[in-house]
Length: 240
Image (cartoon, rainbow, N blue to C red; front, side):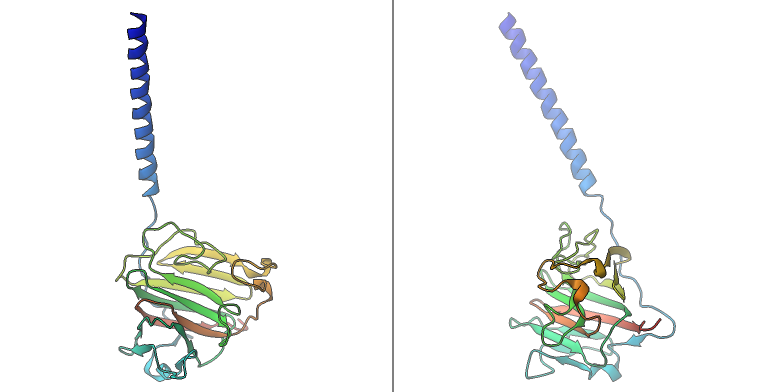
């Protein structure tokens, strides 16, 4: 009789533990689904904005990694910049002027797993080591990482992964003034860092970010996969 009671009690405890674990797991799953969903923000209004994809500025974009300066990309209209996604990759730079302090609004649309990047203050010959990149990557629904969409690539992980599904337009609003860098993705602030504190090599960088030049070019990366950009608005904040 005692053996039977012990077996029933053990079975009851086991069922209670299974139920408790199941409830706990379901609760965790529900919490994990509670992530923000942003939306592409509209282009800025007012004075002082330069439209980088306007007809008069289209000729200032060059593939700086190819002998054919117009290879790997095209303008589909006066506002849409299309990167084909070649296997060889490369960097397409805006040669109109070098940038120091600025605000930038830019929107992008990705094919599945497409990879690109918005580079700034970058060296034309070595943007990887001598430039800053906000990662552009189709990783919808994945946890945020320092190499995921919205990251200061290989350095700072975005607070949330705000990447929308393939085929939907995303927006970046990037402000870089002195050593202060802020990135807003689809309406949510995801990066807010002080580059002057980065006095040691971090991630891929051999040089501390605090020591990198605060002047360089805008570049868009062709790193595999088809990508579209539009509504690129730039405001020079130098001396302001």
